[in-house]
Image 1 (cartoon, rainbow, N blue to C red):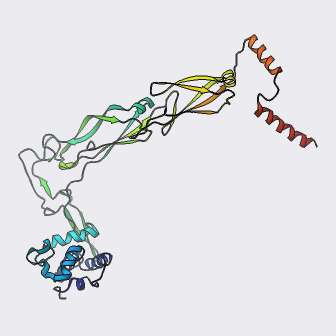
Image 2 (cartoon, helix red, strand yellow):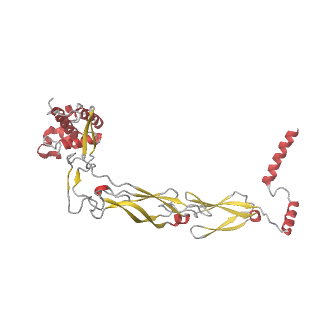
Length: 374
């Protein structure tokens, strides 16, 4: 096959092909002629290079426009910064291929993976969630070894290329039709091995340590709020970056208030005389202020009163929620003789209009029994 032909012909597409068509054609042809699928076939390798070069040009609007005007001459003598006949080697085309298929057919060596993220569960009170706080937590975490500075090698010693993978960090194995790559078991993907391991960290570049970390808990956090502390997780092996620390907030039960988002709830018992005649109650809030609640006369048990702006602060925002007070009318259980006498006098003067709900209920019951009797 003549590979020194038009780029559109190499990719087997029309000159008007859109980006999606170009990408689909390249995927198909690159899979067919990839050297790992055709070991020892120089023609397949040459074709793979050619189609990769063609796609590298045509996928870029500026390069494609120049190619449409001048052909391959647009890229000679360094024109357009690449894609010419004297362009990069096989590794450059592998980069294009990997953008579609990852490293299943032989990707580049990767550096050591970053350290693991850590989770810490922190319980705070509702008051602390209201005001926020600076907390200190103590964790056991893998940190970079100070002796070898995370390299894993004894100071003054060096590293050498891994003999098993020849520095690639991966080894290949034939499995039927495909060639499968695995992380090198000797260097663990690093491509190099340590000549003299650090005595402190045993060559891993990190060691376990107990650390105390300061964490700012902002006002308004709720149950399950997650706070990320960047770079405070486990250090990565062999000098890799550290993971992150995630603080999960849990709230302890409050003696008075319950919470739903930014709303605070509390149940307040009031005497039946206050419920009947009306009055005032004072509720100390989490903000340290005393909130005056007006109880209207004739209020029923279960009725809710709302105090605007007396609830929880909005997390990372402005303003506060509300405080909701649920009234529980308390029936007196210990009465003096005089109090009982007064209540009897009140009962004798009742007309039924004082308690319309109970009067209406018993009227309904009477109607039911009358219907049964007839």
